[in-house]
Length: 303
Image 1 (cartoon, helix red, strand yellow):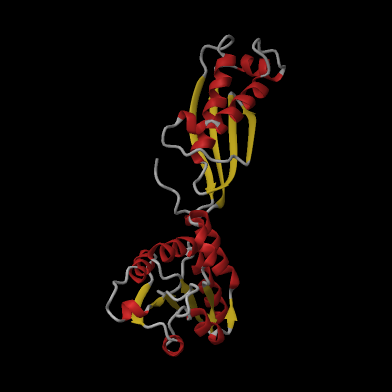
Image 2 (tube, rainbow, N blue to C red):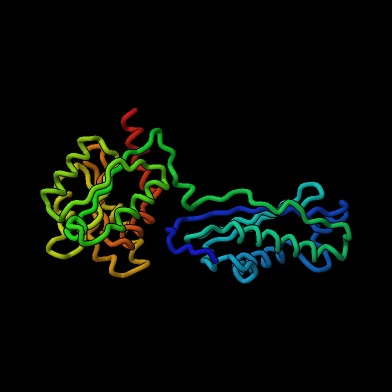
């Protein structure tokens, strides 16, 4: 199965449809009078559909087992057609499109099985996805302009040339995937004065996004939050909380991170962990969802 551990959990909805076409009006009359020999086709097919939705991963090899939070199955008759709709909801890392379509298929097959003693000309057709919501694509804001970003690595050892930077490069890769232009990449020592000067300079140069990586731990030299917090005109605690919460699903030590986020005027400043894993997981947790901030700022600027 595809690795989905890097995805965040969001509410997801999928609605699928299937159509069963009978061959004559007599079959519809038997359905409406509830005189089909095998019983009520709507009640029986609904039960079958519920089981199908919950057991999709057992039938479709590449489907992930996931929590089904809600399933709604409806039927309606239009002429000689029985229209089936199956709506499935979950809060998870992957969608429920296949679960909804599997449910709709089994509902249709159950109806077929129950009607075949009285109608030999039944057809199942048009099994399709009507709607899906949730996941990364729903929260990918389209901005009016390309964002200009800077990535600053805070590390005594990397600045001295004793280690190689991987965290900053991982952050840049993620930003470029989201079409964000990285116009500045620099490495500085863990000094409050250097961090402060760099943040002020980049905000004065009207960078949209400045990401510091490193210095968010608990050693005496980890001073990035102390350097940046006094510069912020508006702290945004939820950003750091989201990164920590996501990180703790993968590694409990993420609770020790002192990540920070906030605005200095119209520049968004982030302080992320300096480990490659911590930086990458933070980026996975925050992007592209974080970009909504700039949609709000653009709207405010032009209002």
